Amino acid sequence: MKIYGVALLAFCFLTGKLIGNYLGVFLGLESDVGGVGFAMLFLMLAYTYFKKKGIVKELTTQGILFWSSMYLPIIVAMAATQNVKAAVSQGPIAVVIGVVVTLVGFFLVPLISKIGQSQNEK
Amino acid sequence: MEVVYKLIDKNGLVFAFLVVGIIMYLSFLVSKHLFKNKIPGVALAVFAGLLLALFGSKKGIADFPLFAGMALLGGSMLRDFSVVATAMGADLSKIKQAGWAGVVGLFSGVFFSFFGGVLLAFLLGYRDVESLTTLGAGACTYIVGPITGAAVGASSDVIAISIAIGVVKTIVATIGTPLVAKTIGLNTPQAALVFGGLIGTTSGVTAGLAATDAKLVPYGAFTATFYTGLGCLLCPSVFYFALKVFL
Image (cartoon, rainbow over all chains, first blue to last red; front, side, top):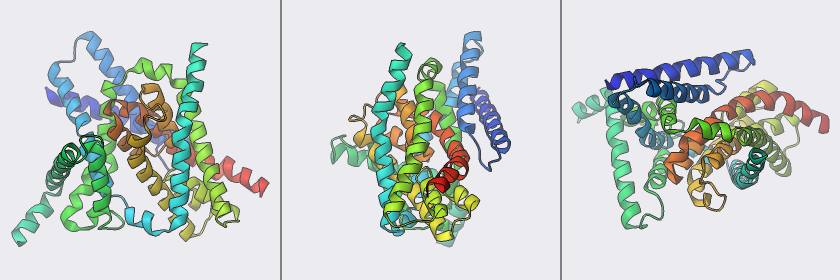
C-alpha cells in the first residue's frame, strides 16, 4: 500500500528532525542542526535495506515518489511566500552583500569539488 | 462571491494546489514557446512565484487571506518532507565518496559568506563589531542573521538588513544557479554536494538545483541542511570573538 511508503517517509523525517533538534539543544542553539540531512540518510538506509529484503513493493515506492515529485510545486509556493519586498526595499546594502556573497559561493564550487576529487584519488 | 471566499478560506491548501498547478502549467508553456526550453520551466515558475510574492510583504502572496494556503504548501513542514523524499533516488555511495569535499565545502561556505559579508559591510561604512557580525551572519542565511544578531545584541534595523541579505542570497541562488551551472561544472552529485555546502540556504540551493537538474537536488539539500546549524554555531561565537580581536 502507498501509505506504507508515506509512513516510512514520515518515520524517517521525524526521527531525523528529532536528532537534529537534540543536536541543536546539545550545542546550545535554538535551531535544528542537520535534521533533514539525518532524515535523508535514514530514508536511504531504510529503503536500501527493505529493498534488499524484498519487503518493498512497487506501491510502497510510489507513496514516496509522489512526495518527491511534489517537491517542485512546493518550491514554487515557497518562492511565492517569501518576504521579497523586504529584500528589495532594504536598499543597496542587502542587495550588494547578498549578490556578491552568492556569486563568490558559485565560483568556489569548481575549486572545492576539485580538492575533494584529488583527495579521493589518493 | 461570499460563498466562494468562504469555500477557499476553508480549503486553502487545496486552492494552493490549484494555484501552483496553474503557475507551473503557464511557466512550462512560456518556456516551451517563448524561450524554446532554453530557460527551464521550473526556473520560470519559481521566478513567477517570487514576483507574486512582491504583492504581499511578510509572507508574500500569503498575506492575502485568499492565498493563505500557499504558506502551508510552501512552509517548512511540507518542504522538508518532500526534500527528504527525494533522498530515495540518491546514491549513498556517491555521498560517501564526496563526503570530504562536502565537509570542506560546508566550512568554506560559512567562512567565506561570513567574512565576505563582514568585509562588504565594512566597506559600506559599518564599524561596530556587533553590526558587522550580524551582517556577516546574514550573508550565511536569513536564519543565521537574526539568531546571531540577537545573540550579540545588534540593533533591530541591522537585524532586518541581515534577514534581507539572506533573502537576496536565496533569490540569487534560485535564479542564478541554472544560469551558471555549466560554467561552474555543476553537473555531478559531487559538485552538487559541494554547492549545497557553499551556498547553504536550503531554499535557494534546492530551488536552484531543481531548476538546473532535479537529480542533483538531494545531494545539494543534504549538505545545505547542516549549513544553517553550523552558521548559528560559529557566527555568534568563534567568528564574533575573532572580529573583536581584530577590530
